[in-house]
Length: 384
Image (cartoon, rainbow, N blue to C red; front, side):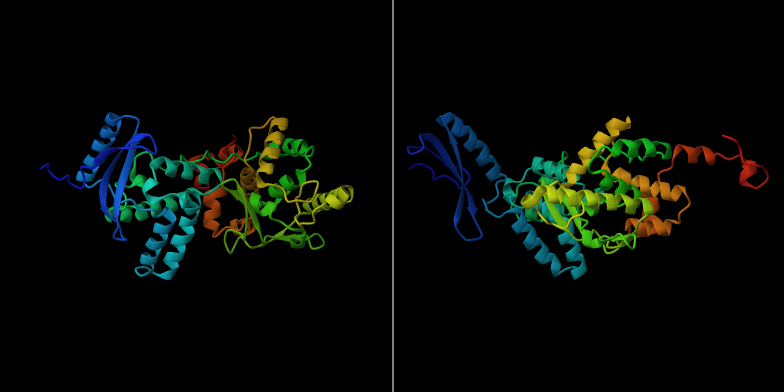
């Protein structure tokens, strides 16, 4: 009598319906008590035998987890439930918020099908969508912890988030702000664009791209020279998302300069002309910045407009966010108190404003190259 095969040795047979050789190896019983098997196929018996040998070796070493259909999102939900019993509710809420971007990217994938390249691609997409490095770091840290627990209970053979190729994307290049002498050429080139008022508004108020795209006329008071930031219209994973402002301080009222009010009034008049010209095709959405048919502009449209302006003005290409950097830097350079700038930008603290937006201009570097005698008050300022 032949020796009975062990669970990890598997069997080979010809699958007539598929017309292929087939091999199966047992991986034990799942949570439902049913026997779980791995199945491989091949055109020849030798091919299948090689695949079976690899599976059997992994099974013998305990590297072949019981097949489960659970997704990353489902396992993450159970992980969060367990954490809710260990940490404060506020902490769990923060976990849910920090993990949300990653769940949108990979939550639908089976836990056991997750590979390092999935995480790499997810991080790249999130960075391209504008997620900050802090948010990327938190999302990756939580993903590692969730997968680490799955590894401990033998749901996965290894943690794909621990692999060497899964690292945070490189830091984006430092912001490039417009120098004061570059602003006139920039504005002259921008006036040729239909959406010039949107770029002008960002440059004169420091609004974020999403805040400008989410701005509605009901939030603009041209008589009182103010606007209130109440919405945010951004992109993530190729889709446009509408949400509340990023933080409580981002929900704010911003005072407008006379020039900015004049530009917005001209834009509103142009929009009225477009409404009359479009007739029944016009969509009344209430947004400030719309296409010629009244629909809100896609946030990425501003990127393309800005690049055309920079090319026309002979300037290096900027990001829309660099106009916000420029606004903050010019204010600080003129001596506007950092507390005022921080409130205008909707930052959490003045310290954050200084750390993120105080880009030193070349003229300032020369201005503060002082002699020792000047520093101690014994001489006049050096000439650059």
